[in-house]
Image 1 (cartoon, protein in one colour):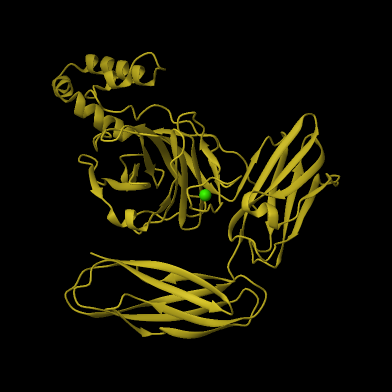
Image 2: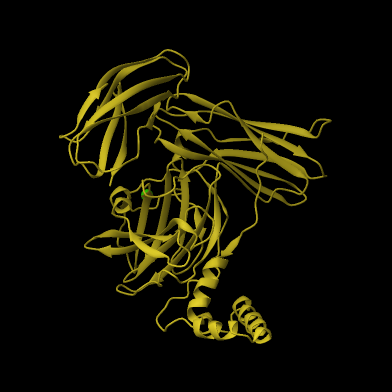
Length: 465
Ligand SMILES: [Ca+2]
C-alpha cells in the first residue's frame, strides 16, 4: 500500500530552454566572449543568472533581451495544489458545485484542472474580450524539451469557445518548431457560456497526438491571458511551467506523525450497487483525532451516504481505520468522484483527506487497436483486440458492435454476442478492418456494447499519415 501525501510544488524554468534563448539573444556577445575573455564571460553569466533569479525588481524581458511585445512567460506560475485528483466534470460550460478543482487561484482568470485515465480536464473563467493560452508540458520534463509540449489558445468565437492547438516540437533542441495539431482540435470537446464581463471554458483534452493522461504522470502547466490577435512567444523562447501530478489521493493538514492510505477491493462501482472504501491510519506522534465526517463530493453528493462518527481509538501498533460504505443510487451520474473525509481533533486538527473512485458503466471498453498507421495507396487488413472489462459482480450479457467509416469494412466481429459470467471478468474480442485504398486522416471507430436498455460506447481513433 502506498501512503499518500503532499509533495512540494516544483517550478521548472527549463534550463536548456533558457540557455537556448539566452544564446540566441546574446549570440553576438557569446561569440565574442568565446574568442577569449573567459573571466568576463563568467562574470557576465553570473550577472545574468543573478538578475534572472532575482525577484521582481527588473523586468525580465529586458534582461533576456526579448523583443518588445513578447509576453512574460517565465514568471512563476502559482499552483493551488500540485496533486490533481481524478474527477469527471460535465462539459457544458456551466460550473456546478464541486464540479471543478482549482489549480490556479487568480482574480483575473481562475483555472481548474483534473483528470481521469485518458482525459485531462481544464476549466477557466476568462475576462470578456480576452483569450487564454494554456502551455502544457505533458511529459513534465520541461518546456522546450521533447515533442510533448502543447499550446492551446482558447478564444470566444461566434457564441462559443474555439480552441487552437499547436505542438512545440523541441526534439531538435537547436531548432524548436511549432507544429499544428488539427487532430487535437478535432478530438477536444469544449463548451462555454458568455456571462457578465467574463466567459467560462470547459474542455476535455484527449488527443492521439499527445501523451495520454495516466496515474502518476507529472505535467508542467501555465496559463496566460492575452488580447485577441496578440501573439504568444516565438518557439525558441522559454516558458516557466509548474508541475502538477495526476493522483487518486490527496490530503491537507495531516497532523505530524500521522499517515494514511486507502484500501479498495475495487475502485469502481456501478449505479445501483454499493462500495466500501477503508481509510487506514498510522499515528506515530501524539495527535488526537476526535471525529470524522465522510461524504462524496460534487455530482456524487446526492446519490451517496454522508457519515459522521467519533474517530476510532488507535491500537497498540498505533493503527486505526475508518470505513466509508455507501450504496450508489441508480440514477447517479457516471464518472470519477471524490470521497472527502474531514477529521477534527486536538491540537487544532482540521484534516481533509480525499480519494477518487469511479461510478462506472457496467463495463469498460479498452481498445488495443493500432493508433498510428503509415499511409499506403493499397487497401489492407488491419486488426487488433478489444477488451471488455466488467465492473459488476453480476453476469453480463449483451451485444458488441464495431462501426467504421462507410468506405471501410469491418471484416471480423462487426457484431458479437457478449457474455461475461464471472464477477468483474474480461472478454477479448479480436476485430479486423479492411482499410480502403489511400485512406488517410483521423479515422473514428465506434465501439459499443448494448446490455438491456443500457448502451456503453467508446470512440477510438486511428491516425493514418
Ligand atoms: Ca460543467
